[in-house]
Each structure stands twice: as structure tokens, then as C-alpha cells.
Length: 263
Image 1 (cartoon, rainbow, N blue to C red):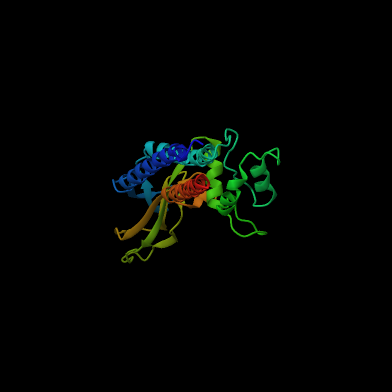
Image 2 (image 1 turned 90 degrees about the vertical axis):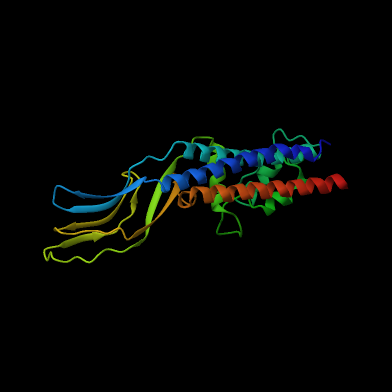
């Protein structure tokens, strides 16, 4: 038996991911607090005035780079944990990969057993642990599952550079009263962040003598350039949840191997 020292590799990989996430968080705080956005007034060809918040400083490349490294390291940690568990109980684990599945029924069973149910790829001693961690998305015909974790695992397993986008939405907007210009025609107020133009339109109007104060509160964040659910979650938050799952899986396998070694 190799022993529990086999778990040092996934522990190290998880620590690397933690360091990368910390750098993503620190970089995001610096970016969003250092004049990366400005309030701008423009006049379009048809005379419509546009008051908007514009991203004037590109997102530093180190942020998506470190986010990608964190995601990939977390994804690797799941496979490394299973390999370490197999080594710790003296079973071959070279072909064993953490069994991310589409459902808790046939698909998970197939991934646990491998091509030969008589000699399963993943030792049966670990099946209940994997089932308890629900490595599959939610479904209408069964309880449990986690869409976000499953989506992040898919992204990590593709091993490609992950895109990270700036997102911004107003927490509150207080427009000043409009006086002294009876000809003002309001076209619209408010809007959504445009990730292609990197701007948020606050107001569109026609007329003159309109002044906007600085009574705004905005919520800034980062998002993955993927569809929901991962695309709807702030990047550091999503990475933190994925990391917590990897650590929980590692702890479960470590404890089980310790129990098996004491038998």
C-alpha cells in the first residue's frame, strides 16, 4: 500500500488553484477601483443625447489567464484525487478518471464500472462517496445534482482558454430633476450592460440644458463567456464553489482510505 501520502499531489494542485483565485480577486478589486470606467455624454446623428458608463481600460490579461489556470487545476484535482485513492489502497488507477456524468442512473453506473463490470475501473470501495457528491446536473426525474459544478467540470475538461467578460449593472440610479427646458423629450432611461460595446446606457433623451449628477451606484463583476448557469455567476464565486467541491471530494476519499488502511 502506497499510503495517504499519495494525496499530496491533489492537495498541491488545489493550493495552486487557491493562489490563482486569490490573484483573480485581487486583480478584479484593483481593476474596478482604478478609473477603468467613465461617465460619458454623446450626441447621435438624429439629435438624441446618450448618457452612459463606458469601460475605458481593458481587462488585464492576467485575470482570465489566472482564472483559466485555477479552473483547470481544480478540474485536474478531481482526477488526481481518484488516482491517489486507488494508489492508497493498492489498486491500479491509471485509467480511472473522476466520473462526471449526465445523470445518477445509467450514465454514472457506466462510468463507475467502465467497460468491464467484473473488473470496474473505479474500485467499488469509492462508489458511495462519488454518488454522495452527485457529479451530475439537476434533472426532473431525480433529486440532487448541481448544474453549476457540472458545467464548470465540462469547461475544465475541454482544456481551452476560458474567456472572462466584464459585467456591470446599476445598483441604484438617482437622476436630478429636469428644469428650465420644457422641450425635453425623454426617450428612455436605463439599460443593460453591452459586453460588445463595453458600456451601459443610463439615459437617452432629446433636448438641452440637461445635467446629470454623480448619484449612481454600480455593481461590477466578472462573468464567464459561456451560457448559464456558469455564465450567470461571478467568476471568483464560481471558482470558489468549484474549489470547495474539489476539497470536499478530496477530504472524503482521504478519510475513506484512512479507514480502509486501519481495517
